[in-house]
Image (spheres, rainbow, N blue to C red):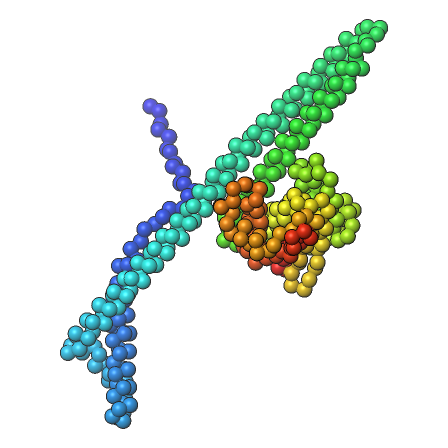
Length: 353
């Protein structure tokens, strides 16, 4: 006779919304507080009032004892009902707040699961691309060996050199494809960390080198997004390629990288000479990004950011600046601007220490 295996059911990772009747507990607690505290306090106030007008000796202890005698039951009942009503309302409000908090936690976990699932699918795609490039690379290597053996058996092989050059080009293309797959996986990891930072109540700060985020952000924008545009970028008065400075501060790396890229891309979009200055001040770090673009009135920029949904063209929404503002507010940072039409703009990123 076969033995039936015992099946252990796994619990869900999602938070369970536990319903508790806080209103009932509030009614009982309110009624008890109304009788024991409210009624006694009322009697003490009454005795003190009599003392002020009649100049008698205030008997607070006697007043408290009298409040629990049988002949004061109407007043006791009134305080009990009032306390029960007040406690029931407080319990109901607390239950709503508790349910709202649990619902937010549920949505946060749901969001993290969806992001993790999305990253898992794209990670599999990146792994598949990398595996495909490796298989093609092995096939090319084997084909190169076969052609080498064939040409070695002949006195002359005029097409072998041309084939070798084509093989080399194909290998370079495969290497580029493999590198792109690895970059995609790295980018997905960073996006996941950023989304977790967005969903968290507060940023998790880490002590790192700010220039290690700034310089790669400039390089990535110039090579990928603005590779067809001649843009001169300087950091503290020197070309960005020559930057060897370091500044160790505490910040959230993923959100800070997004803020820097948003502000830098906005400057590179409208100008071709970008000057970046990093100032280490007493209680904060100030990053200035100045461009020689057409400029914009600060009030108009504020209105544009606040009414992004009303813009007709996506490039005019300044959505990147809106995201940057949101991220900086979560880590007690600030974003400022100084601009005049026709004289360029300067954005100020203020990070607390």
